[in-house]
Image 1 (tube, each protein chain N blue to C red):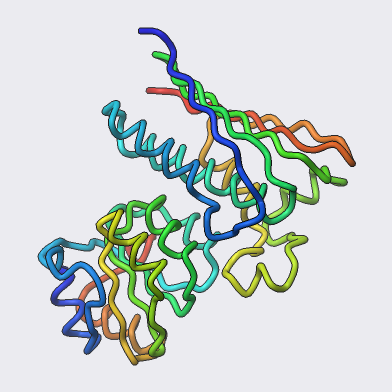
Image 2: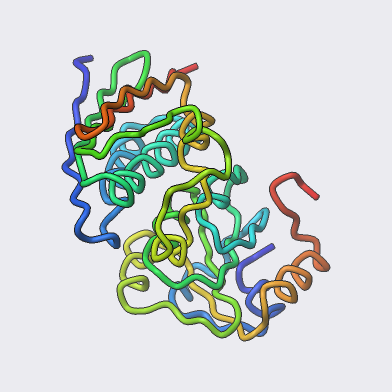
Amino acid sequence: MKIKELVSILEGEVVFGEEFVENEVFAACGSDMMSDVLAFVKEQAVMLTGLVNPQVVRTAEMMDMKCIVFVRGKRPDKSMIDLAEERDIVLVCTKLEMFSSCGKLYEKGLRGASGK
Amino acid sequence: MENIKLHYDVDNSDFSCAGEASGKIKKTLKDLGFDSALIRNVAIAVYEGEINMVIHAEGGTIDAEISPEKVTVVLADRGPGIPDIEMAMQEGFSTAPENVRALGFGAGMGLPNIKKYSDTMDIKTEIGVGTTITLTFNFN
């Protein structure tokens, strides 16, 4: 699924990385615990989270994640945007909650780490 | 090829900087053209170790050596030491304070993740002195 499609599905806003929205994501991970995300092994996955701190971007970097979606209306601050800019990671915001966001993406064919 | 050696100091005073060293190691491996799966394993394991150094210890050092056969990483912190390594290796067990859990850490997956992503993991610890973790990642 292309990032621009994901943005549309989630009625989202691209906060950083408009030039990368043609990139694809092949899996998704929704979590507020970064160590759970680090145990997740898919390449080019999208992270959905309600956490807002710079370690979210660093975790995405380590996992080769190309896109982070902040749910529940959360917004990244400047330090996070700067980190994402250095690492070419797209940041998206949605007002939808975690459950609805994951459900909508699942409905459109995106799957989790186990392929389920 | 001569082995490549990297050294980083980890300061525990600024949590937002935790991950700088592991990010730089990752970039170096990427620039050297290593396999992406190996790079990810090294990056995740070292990142978990670096975060632990900032959360639990008083900072420390990370030294990485890249040879033709493997990557070796030594994470040495300045304390306080791990009282029970077996307990610390259990998934879900964490001594992280509440303010750290609010940032998304303290799930108790740090050491288990480090073990999962490395080929060998050796932990030496001394209460009141510190902990040294030595990891190896073999090239297939």
